[in-house]
Length: 45
Image (cartoon, rainbow, N blue to C red; front, side, top):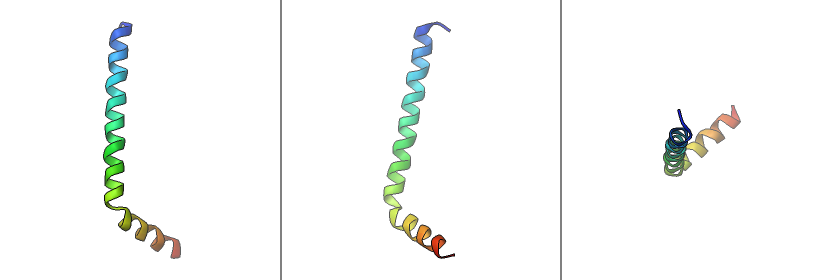
């Protein structure tokens, strides 16, 4: 694997990672109330 191929692979992996992070962030904003309630409920156990 030459340097150009390596950089292309790294770029693809970084883009995938950022997209996965963005999806997780959007999901957490959508379900923030439910996540908060679950956290508070677990705190009292």
